[in-house]
Length: 219
Length: 219
Image (cartoon, rainbow over all chains, first blue to last red; front, side, top):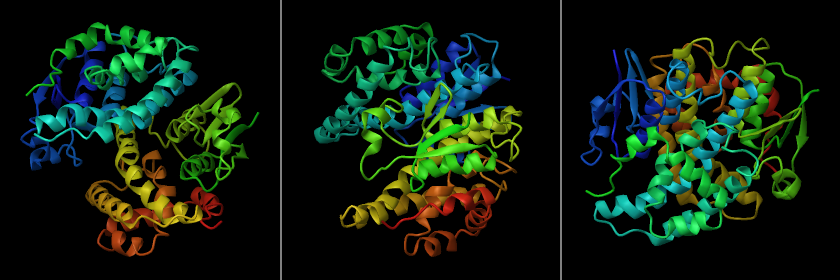
């Protein structure tokens, strides 16, 4: 039975998992969840994820939520499929570096990127004016994170080492949306050539390009 | 060579790792980092962790930051030591549930617990009045998370399943500090008997009791 992914192709966390599924050449069925009508807060959905957020993966009797737990599961279950070992799980040192930079994305990058994207695109869709103060404060935080990435990418080709891993992949949807914010790419990539090169590299992968088609910001 | 843990026994993220080291009976040296004088922002420390936060683990040439990446490393490196498999790594379904509830602690529990602890204890140490609005807003968030835990603990003995895992362990330091906030235990545990029983169980473990001695809130 194919995996079932409950989610929405506009949600960054859903597209993180979609990208991983395509990298690993895993068959799945996408079950759309309508976020604008609040389907993710319905009793049927809360039974799958009590926190009421997409995505959720069902594999037979197993239900998993939290996008980063899902991508790890996919990599561990389908070790022989598609892109070679996004977790570097056969080597403890390498896999620990992947795990460390997965944490960095989760705790420093996304918490700053998310409010910028919300204010720039989601608030206007809901008829609210964007809060420029929130945008500016978080752009400052993103700058500091990207300064650290710029230094890191001078030591290793990818964030966790010499090969493309989940630590890079997890960044794709949120950076993609940020590049749609006016002036972002010029300001952020202009002074950070290594980050620019890294973004061009990871965003040009076939798996992510399959996902980008669904990432619409308009109504 | 023994592991070197750079950190501070008052820091919740440091004590998370200390608890894990004691559970796994791993020898280590604690190298104190003085947070009040800003030692974690010094160039020497930033070379170990560019984000300037404790803890950092050094194992020979390998330097790891982010407490949850460190606990996973300890569990994977010292599989045969101490408490049996806090990661359930021999079983993909069980280990995925551990990973999922590790994410829950990281993304729902700690982000709400942390500001309550900061305002209640750290702000006064720095001569600032606690911001009651921030405390109240985050106590509401904690309640919602604990409601989900109460339901979950009706299905399984621990958060990730029938055995004690990193998903439980990671909660220890922050819940411990929260129980020092006036009225917290009565309000939060009173209506949630399963959460109360779970907290009494996990906080009574010998490994955590070794750590608690250093968790002082006074100057």
